[in-house]
Structure formats: C-alpha cells, structure tokens
Length: 195
Image (tube, rainbow, N blue to C red):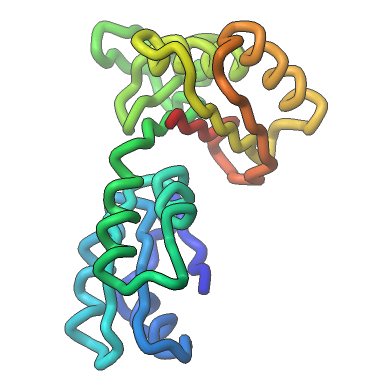
C-alpha cells in the first residue's frame, strides 16, 4: 500500500498503523522514503501484532532501489539485509527552486533561483533546471566512469523537455546508462539517483 507524503505532508504513526492493519500479510515492510518519517514508521512496530520491518529509506530513489532488491522467495532477514544494502548504493539529488534569498555553503542564492541538492545539501545554483541537474550529476560522477542514472521529472516538466535532458546527460556521461521517468512530483523539477 502506498501512503501519500512529501514535504510538509509526512504521514503520522497512526496513518502508517492503519495502512499496516489494512494489509492482509504475515509480515510488512515499510519504506519511509523520507528521513522525517523513519521514526513514525519505527513506532508502528509497537502498535501491531503483525511483524513490521522498517527499511530506513530517506529518499524515493533509495526506496525504489530497496524494492528492486526485494526477493519474494527470500525470508524477511535476507530481504532486510539486501534492501538495507541497496540503500547504501544510491546517491540522491533534487532540483527545485529557492523560496527566499540566502547564503549556504558559500553559495549566494536568490529567491527563485534553481538549486541542486545532494542528499539534502545545496551544492549548486543556477537559472535553468536542466543546467542545475547536469551540475549535480557532474558532482555525483566525478569519481565514476559508469553508473546508472535515473531521472524522475516533475509536474512542471514536459516530456519533450525531459527527453532533451536525457540526451544532454547521455552526451555528458557516455559511459552511463540513463533512464528517465515521469515522476509527476510537485516542487521538484527533477529527482535523480546515481547507482
């Protein structure tokens, strides 16, 4: 079951508990996909008789990577170990806009600037979402020859623009495998992961 969330819309322990209660399963795995939800997810374990395992995913790309590591034939311990290991192989970035003037890590940021975040820290600033995305990826891949780059484009990005960005990424990083998906997320032009 998927529970809607996002910035300022974190699900409560009660909402997570109700979701676990609705699931007819012997065991449940929760992927919070947000550092602010991990504690609430952990509290669900004490409220239900259903065994609950929390894989502490902090981002959507980490959660997706953990899901890819899940094996329906394996037991909960093997799945917990494999899914937790998968979290560590993902670098997550986000491209969004500044809501106010500020200074961070030596960067001067003006309201409306496009900002690039690496694991939640602002590392680059620009005027175009595609340019900031490429700057993020240059940082992510500075010590890698090849990688899997997955881009989820947001509500404000058109498919044509996303395909153009995919071509730009492929040209900038010819040894990388690039996948682009419509994420439809608000507030973030792009969410990107590198594995």
